[in-house]
Length: 323
Ligand code: PBG
Image 1 (tube, helix red, strand yellow):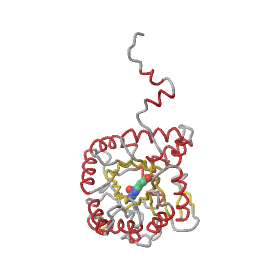
Image 2 (image 1 turned 90 degrees about the vertical axis):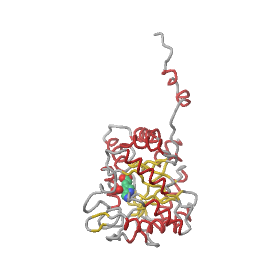
Image 3 (image 1 turned 180 degrees about the vertical axis):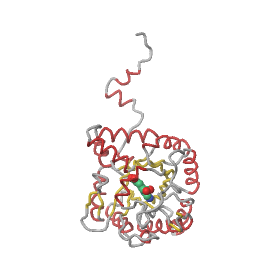
Image 4 (image 1 turned 45 degrees about the vertical axis):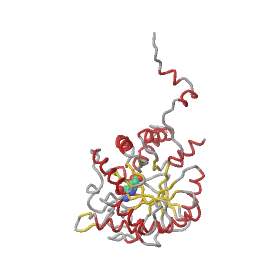
């Protein structure tokens, strides 16, 4: 054939392919989500998330040393709460589990960027991210509690708080509350475009936080919408978000792409529990190769425009990348 263009020339050898690679994944793109539970020496397997554990604080410290050694710069902490009440009081207890975990971690592994989830769902009996009054998830009252929660994490020494609750106006309110307490250096990783997704199922098993009544559709976004995501992201940036997040990641790659083009702040994406579970389950059946599927999905999230990825695969991916 008389061809001038032969794209295959640039695919001929591994060396050439490495020269023309457009997207590269690196351990320092990754954030490892971790679950903390009361106890000592506790490393409790999470049934709905094979390979993930609920860790007591001592085990969490050991885990984070390993995570840091793998080149992963950040962890994002979720608390398993056994003192749930209607108001989520444990969320802002200055001596609460997460608060203790943060200060222990900042003592033992000060280099690592410690991030905490800000939302009430693990702490409330009803499992909602905000307060419930007369069968309604109320906004402004919830934001007040979320501010207290964020400040309590900041007092414990957290690097970034990550509000995942999707209440209106909470980024600005949390920024003000942090600043008023002198925490001007604490960053906000805003779950800006968080969709009402079935892919959170395994995570809710990990924290026993499945809502007891009503769903989350009055605060989390409808999967059909993308303009609304841009609006949410713009509002969060105006209110002071340092980083904005799209969640979940794999079913929302187009959203990651438009958000990346819309704002100048870094964009995070959350490769959530159900996305993790799908790969594990298919690999167990022998239908896909676990490591290849993991790397292909993480690369796709990066290619879509994410600067950083929260993923339960963080350690496995970092190991693979450095081997
Ligand atoms: C709740 C929260 C959820 C996740 C992170 N924070 C679940 C929910 O909104 O119900 C899900 C993470 C995952 O599925 O991996 N504040």
